[in-house]
Amino acid sequence: MKLTYYGTAAGEGWPGLFCNCDLCKAARDLKGKNIRTRSQALINEDLLIDLTPDTNMHCIVYGLDLSTVDNLLVTHSHSDHFNASEIELLRDPFAHERPNIFQVYGNNRVKEKIWMDVPGVEEGEDKSKFKFHYAEPFQPIAIKDYIVVPLLALHDKKEECLFYQVTQDGKTILYAHDTGAFPEQTIEYLKANKVHLDLVSLDCTTQSEPDGKNHMGLIDAVKEKQRLTELGLGDENTVWVVNHFSHNGLWLHDQMVTEADKYGFLVSYDGMSIEI
Ligand SMILES: [Zn+2]
Ligand SMILES: [Zn+2]
Ligand SMILES: [Zn+2]
Image (cartoon, rainbow, N blue to C red; front, side, top):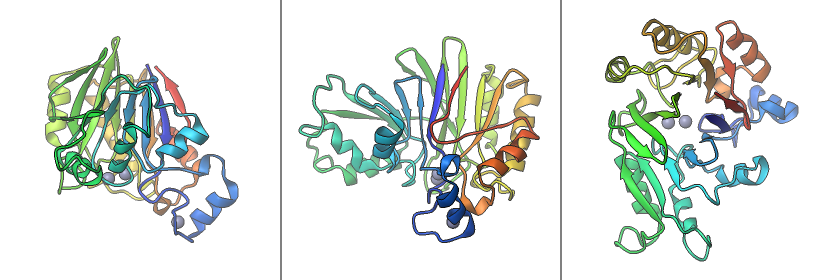
């Protein structure tokens, strides 16, 4: 199984759209892996996670190809993860020769956003090109030959924020953004339905600063790694990655690599692929 990161920044992007701080200035200067767009990832070539406002840029600049992708997992409705109006582009005359219906999995807030932002949907008109599925926490979903488990995140209390465990051919990826320390219900599920995690991608929005409540800093990610290891879910064969970074965390890419390396984490960057 392969995971490709297309967007690895927090909500404002890095450099932040309107930001004039030293970290954003440095990213504009240095470019390379310091340029981070908003959240999106792809499993193999066919299972998309999140529909960021930077999706089109990911297609044009990083070679993301959505022409044959039919399945989307949405973590939550925040604007850096889900730009509902893109769903309209599945229709004629914006998209041709897509025989399959695009399947969207997410929480009820994601559904509301589609219903609000895609013309005609609220009135019960054209839903012919996509289908929304409520992703119920802890209820496994079969998508092609994947088993996907939506897990509860600790993030925005106003909606049911999710992250996803995805298994295919005996390999499992845990893609955990945006979340603070995993809620007890999620830990209980992982304990009771134990699978070996081959790749764990943990939130690291606040980098140098601890958080743990809505997001994680590096030190929170280290604690979560310890907890998952103690539970026997991950081990030295697991690929541990930190991802989803904000300029407010103060570490440009190279420093993030230095700090994360001390704890056995890889650092995501836009365009990075990992095979497990
Ligand atoms: Zn985010
Ligand atoms: Zn900034
Ligand atoms: Zn969020």
